[in-house]
Image (cartoon, rainbow, N blue to C red):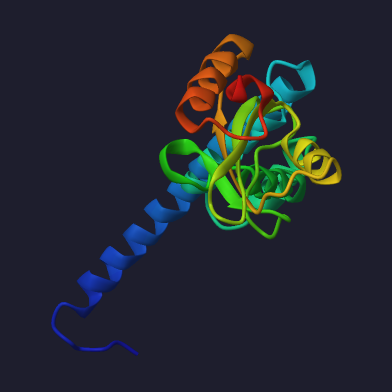
Length: 190
């Protein structure tokens, strides 16, 4: 049986041609994705990239891949998509939350982001009257805040500023000590 609508056969033939081109393109996409993932997996296994590099690679791959990308990732890369996604959540939890790339929040800690362990920061503690009471620096922010509280320092808010190294941390700390003159710092009180 044939349908006698004008142009019907030509349009159907055009759709069939497009379908064939799409199938061929999808096959080439699958091959390229497979090659890309093998290179990522090999680089991780060889130690030339680390978990944080995998996070970047995963984001970039996800942006250009077809549905089912996590399954293909899991088959080719020794670190599962779920583990990479957990690392993404961990990094987001430590991303600066305050203005100009800083962190800030209440103490005791709630759900706010804080600097991760190993991140060098200079911090300012504020008392219940919103007066800066202490300035310090650390690479283990949460632990240091908890020690301050156990030592009896009364504070309810904090700001933390990232520093690239110890020399930069000392310079930032010195500036903040002169700026705020916190009453719990011996150096600022002198």
